[in-house]
Image 1 (cartoon, helix red, strand yellow):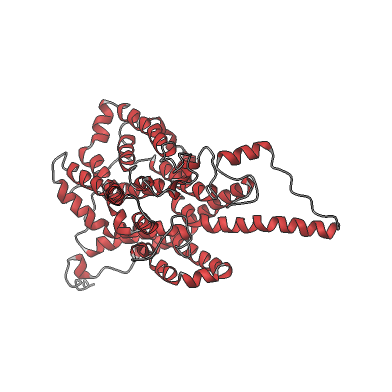
Image 2 (cartoon, rainbow, N blue to C red):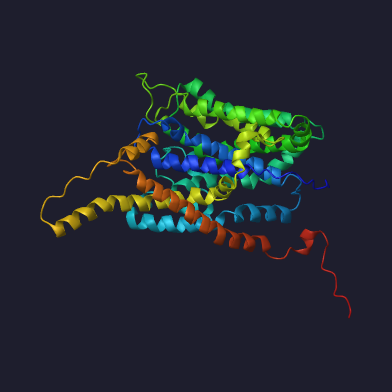
Length: 449
């Protein structure tokens, strides 16, 4: 057995998780209907953040369990209990709440998506995107009952495969210092090649193929495995310690250089529309835009490696801020809860004008006056975030969006502190291991007194 080596904690990972989850949530809140704000393209490419989540999950899971051995079922089951126990409490709580909401306000959708409702009970709803003839539109509400939960369904398959993937990675890497390089290049090839090949051979991609490439669990396993390979490179080569001592700022500067390059490529570079105009919605143009489903993997991998060496750089230092770290710990809970809370605040916003009109009718028979325009600073902020100043789309006014966002993080904090730890402890305790699993044969007779 290898001795368990004490590796330095990666304090900036929680901050990175906070930025990725916030990117996805803001994209869901702000980018409907399409507007032409400063952050339109960046918010519309939330699928880049989803890939970052999957790579980050593979990276931190392998980094944390690098020295574990899964050559017996008890070890495998203990890993499953720890990994799934961290999110199942939140998952089933928000499953129940969103299912109740659907039953009350969207019964026709519940009947039409009964298969997704049932498969969601066992974290298998993402597999529906691989069913021939089924079309899954990104941003659509076809993942019932809780739309964002498909990501956990996709990740669950990679978590189930983790013991096998780890054994494969250990065998493929061998004992040499650079043994991790061939499996890393193989995983990177499996991540980057399929989408461009499909686009080049067929000249485009329809919604069914897009949804499959985005959601289908087997398609996203290479992303998870690529994150594992980056962690293997960090641990096996010990570059994080050795090179960090020799050149403490070299890798930090590299990590800092990746950040503006990433923002330039993801937030500015775009494929123009048919008329050459600036695009309104990133995923609405199914020409070469699907490349971004997987194209950011090298940047994510290089940043994870470089920011984990030496001082990590200024951006990694900012990610270590306690506020970002605390928000990052709520990543899964925020992701699972934000759609339900968004629906509730949208109902409240929709009902508010009606309540105002009724109040005015009771007070006076005079016709109700139109609502005053928003203040200039509010209108500017709405335009900045691709949000219409009033009337249409997801949120008509930014005050409702901000209230929904604050409520989402507050609820996520309560759930993570009170729901998930209880279930995780329950799963981690489990039943006593059979003697045959412990390798000790039948239990020894009791000692005589």
